[in-house]
Figure 1 (cartoon, rainbow, N blue to C red):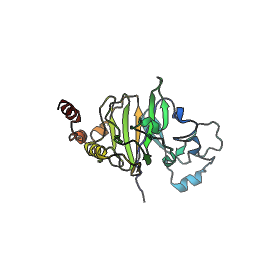
Figure 2 (cartoon, one colour):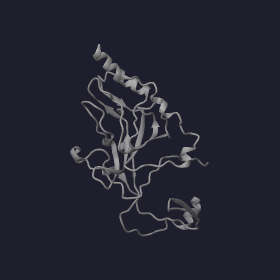
Figure 3 (cartoon, rainbow, N blue to C red):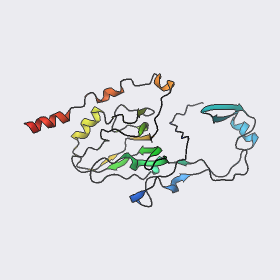
Figure 4 (spheres, rainbow, N blue to C red):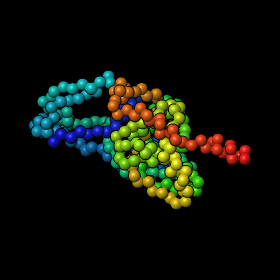
Length: 254
């Protein structure tokens, strides 16, 4: 039975992904090099290919996919020289670090891999995850991401479960906050976070979200702009946010 497989894909056109510099964290933490898996040497004969039903060879060139009917396997290579290999990584092995005093730390602490940009301190792209983790902060701390603008463009997705800053964000969905676009938790998440006294550590285990963060501007395709799944009312999630700033001024005046 044929089944569809869906996921998220990111392609960079310059440089390669590497593990981020750990700085004060030290020698280990975040995504450890020992947890990345590489394939073992292996070859496949034509007869095996025919039995497994491989009929087409696909190649991406010039931002387009090309295909060719073949009668042999693309894996019929006996020898290989070099160190440019595919790899895979189990996100559950990510060793997260977090604040144990106060504040929501910049999400760069959850960087799995980074593709370094041309300017110091910037990234062509960071691959960031928000895994199940302990959140331990001082009382009266706002735990979700604060309201902010970013010089980077943020593309977010959800692999499973829910996201603590957007209640309507579902697995398989995506959000895009372009450079300097203000954003933050929705009204429901904000109210819940403000009411939380933060007196006890909290273990977040209800989802796995990720972010592609880039210093580049991203352009939406016609497919994305005209898709029936597009949430044209996305901005309405902030409509019911209270105006705390004017309330604080009024209290001071009184």
